[in-house]
Image (cartoon, rainbow, N blue to C red; front, side):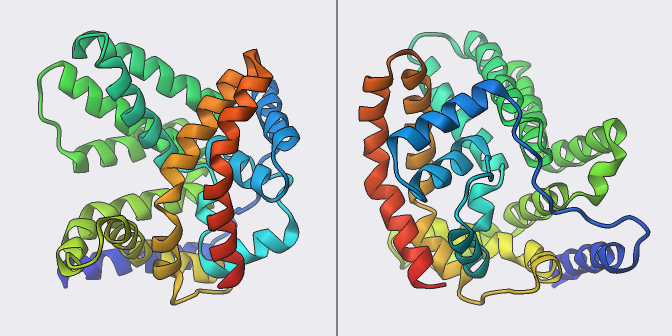
Amino acid sequence: MRILFWIFLISFTILRVITSGPTKITANFPEDTNPLKEKISSFYKKTLPEPHASLLSGMVLGTKTGLPYNFWQSLKITGTAHVVVASGMNVSLLAGFLLGFLALFFKRKTAIPILLTAIWGYVFLVGFEAPIVRAGIMGSLAFAGQTLGRVVSVWRILALTVLVMLAVKPTWAFELGFILSFLATTSLMLFESRIRTYIKVLPEVVKEGLSTSLAAQVGVAPILFVTFGQFNPLSPVINALVLWTVPLITIIGALAGIIGMAVPFLGSLVLYLCYPLTSWFIWVVTSLS
């Protein structure tokens, strides 16, 4: 109960800033101006139909431009819009995949500097959006601690990350992406493992998505309601039905984009592997919106 009190106290304070503060929270999406990012997004659109291509661009690159209006409304109604907003989950997926791959060829102390270079290369590609930067800093601190042989508290890492980000760019405190990323991360750290114990009878693929979604909703639901004017109580269930596809789509899409820049035909073949996954995602979201 004490933890819930602090979560809702933080949410209430932020809501007061949103509704009465002199500086408005912005939920506007920045323009995508990175040439490489635009090139990969264009490759997706040449290969896959809409809304598959735009959904893929959102998951892999955080690109929101080009999303069909009706599909975007369905994402908001079902509470799955976070999938096509640059997310720290993208960095986590990239880090996990690369660490496993690099471990096949290098010792951990050699692999981690390569991994950190790749992480910040991805942050640069996506465009230094607040949730991506947050995940990049937290990942860097955690991996640096491992390299030095130290066990670092995730709470200290999160607190230090917030302080560093606000010191560099204080206006991030009024950006929706920063607020949601901070609250979702905090809620996941507090509640995900506890929720998982209560739903352990469910299949693993559903259990992981549902526990993650429910935990994140504790912190972000009030903000989403005030910002978008709606909240779907079925959102955790809908998220559980589609979140299992996100890691697969993100990793396959990223590999296809890289390959497609060099060998378009081969990249297209790899990209087609995403189509059944994006089809399921789109069907669930549009059917339940």
